[in-house]
Image (tube, rainbow, N blue to C red; front, side, top):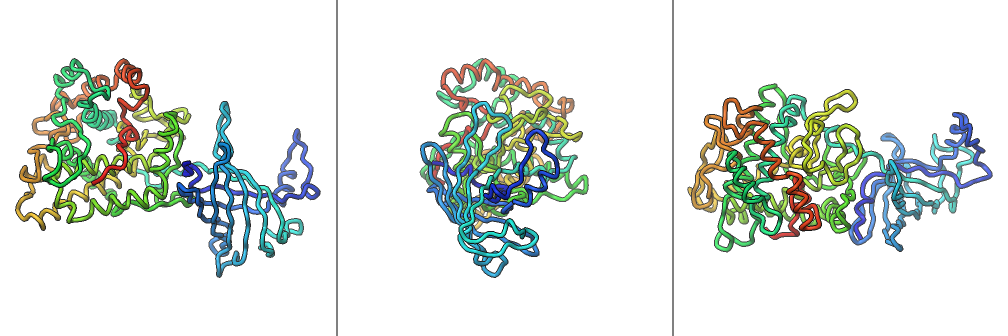
Amino acid sequence: MIYDPLAGSWTYRSFVNRADLLPDLDPENIVKEDVDKWSRYLFGQGVMTFHPTVTGALTGLFEMGTAESPRDMRLNGKIEDRDGVTWIKWNAHGLPGTPSDGWLYEYDAYFTNKWPDGRRQIDAIVGSVVRSQPHDDLAPSQTTDRTAGAGSVASFVMVRPAFIEARDVISLPPELLEMLGSRHHRLHHAIWHGLRDNWATPSDGDISASDKAEIDGLGWAPPRPNQRPTRGTVDLRDPDNGAGEDFLYMHRQMIQKVRELLSGHGLPMIQAWTSIPSPNRKSGNRDGFSVPPAWDQGQGEAAFKGLATIKSDEYWQSRMTFLERKFKDPEYLATLSLDQLGAKVEWLIHNLMHIRWCSRPTDPKTLIPLPGGRPLTDTSEKWIKATRNDKPFYYDDLNDTFSSHVHPVFWRLHGWVDDRIEDWYAAHAAAHPGQVARKTVEAVSWFAKGPWVSVETPWVGPVATGHGPGGHAGDHEHGEHGHPGHDVAVMQQVYDLIFKPETTTAAVAASGTMTMRSVQFTAKIIGSGTP
């Protein structure tokens, strides 16, 4: 059972269970005075933050009071599945040295199911709580009717507040959003990944020979299709094909262009993660790095469990911290070619970071939730730039290559990836002096072909004479000064050849799933993998 959907912050309110004290309400004429009367019988309120484990254990924090007079309590309990219903039992203990010292409450509740035809549903937990140790209520909560000794019971409801998205906390500057959110940049990023991922995928609905010929004629045939990483050292691995180097170089070029734009506008640089952020379930998403909750993508229980697992605290503690240590270990990095580094980072941790920090997407105009994400073949204008609350909105789903680079976490994440290249270089400089040489490739600091580097010029798209090897360098909306492959119309044509409706429909019919041809990182999970 996956319990991570319970993780995160919940708004909590409990009410006195005294029918003889509660005021009457006229359901046909509820007035402010009635609401004011009921508010006197509020037993407690605050924010509860849950940290569930895959084994059903539960820890957390109940935040109440103010900064000057906190009444926080620690939570400990367990979660059980009873005939398809998720039940939760936990205790709340007051914190020593604070006004809540000595408090003890016991809770019994269940996670409410979703109605099949319900509208605007939000997650909720309902139950009852008993005060197990007597204590006086603290002002301003204290009232005659609310004074409660040990054994007093209250009913409560908890609802999950709307998740505060990273864009609302660490938003990218408008100048950068305008560039990254353009159709040109969206198409380039989506087709670069899409071509590498779908060019040579036996039995996975790969691109047809006729479509490949047309794409080749447009200048977009990838010289090195993506390949999954292999185990072993330099002596025990499949031959390099250079796709891993393409992955690292293309994103380094993206980072450089972003830094140039920010510098040109006198804006501060975006700082890379020095380490992968630890689980942060407290309310508010104060740094923009809180993990959004999991949701049902409509692709079956296994897909939902996979998404929830990657977002869980335990996954960070076990899998992601292990991978981070490996990719920072000089001894290990010295055994890898640059291509191996890129392939392993892309498949074993980069994709997972995209998935961990992605949110359930919504329609840019209607705000209707889209559990399965943007329709694959829809690249209409609303997915480029829409309007929300009279302000421009740039679609930024971190799980979609058409939009992930518009998400603010993307640049922290890829900054972390880019720093691993420098760790790799330092490891080889120490272990294999002189075997890896720096050079500049189209104004980007890179490495010369040699024993540990297999590609002379990494691929980021059609070569544009005088404008770099790909679309990001020139950034011409219509390709008027570079290779015609940079033309937005050409890139749209390539996108449609990869993801055209008849192709995706045939792939789904053959496989019975939507995972064969996708722009989503959730379609690229390969299991645990071993560096």
